[in-house]
Length: 147
Length: 69
Figure 1 (cartoon, rainbow over the protein chains, first blue to last red):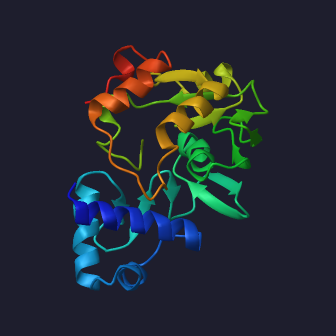
Figure 2 (cartoon, rainbow over the protein chains, first blue to last red):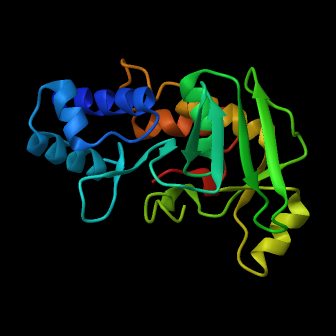
């Protein structure tokens, strides 16, 4: 990743946190003083190197891991906002990335019972829960939305 | 990558599919903090494959399932 793409990536993430949602190409372009065309081209390079994930066929962010730009089964209350995470790992990742305590809400995929977890100082209050990773690490990026 | 009430719930949900691997939610939190802790830093730089693998290794996730490509 060259310095320009690194700057674009970090500015995009910074704006995601500031706005509480995925920024548009226009918003990033204004923030960086770039053209929308240059932002879109940079995002596509970042997508190709797995630094973020774009929606198929459009210049819009789908994932800025651990954040999700679309609703998911993992909601995180942190830093005064609700966020969507791409998966259970990313739900904890949002708290880690923001460096805050928080609350994770989801449901058990088997029984559909609610799962509510308070995390303080990186420690979850629901120790009996388990995390299941279906896809082996070598294949995580084969189909990242499924992973 | 989902959270379940217990191993029993994982097995029922799989319904005969090949299982992946299960870790405790405490370990997941530890893993997430090691993996994602720097993601919104303005000084973030990409990690290489070896650095990512080292994070998994440090948590004892060392078998074939956790080997990155």
